[in-house]
Length: 137
Image 1 (cartoon, rainbow, N blue to C red):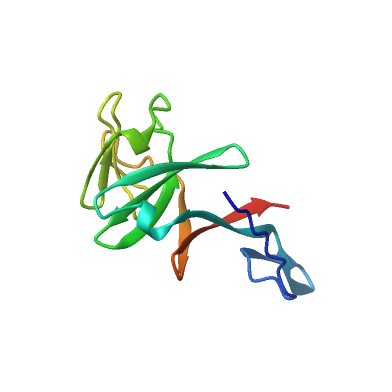
Image 2: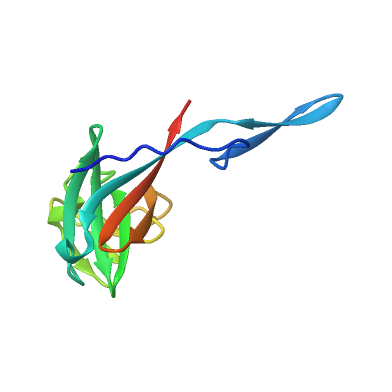
């Protein structure tokens, strides 16, 4: 696996928060952004998932009709490996106890509604798949 860390230009284009100080507003950059090459596009055929790990963070990659989605590989129930589950359309089902999530939004479908798993931005450049990670400063 090749790791490419990208420095952000100023002003930061990572997540930003507006802090109100009774006299003025200030924009503060609160997250660092890494863009990491995780796979070759052809390694993730349509309807399939693979597992990758970035700095100890387990991530599942799913190809849904040619679009690559990245999301946490750990089910919120008991940590089951979602990349070993069943992918049908935009839905992944955990192999351990059947919890189901939308791979695009991370929202749980059954049970319980309201829970979500982290999702990550993906980019395709040529044949390379990249995951964009925002890290706390």
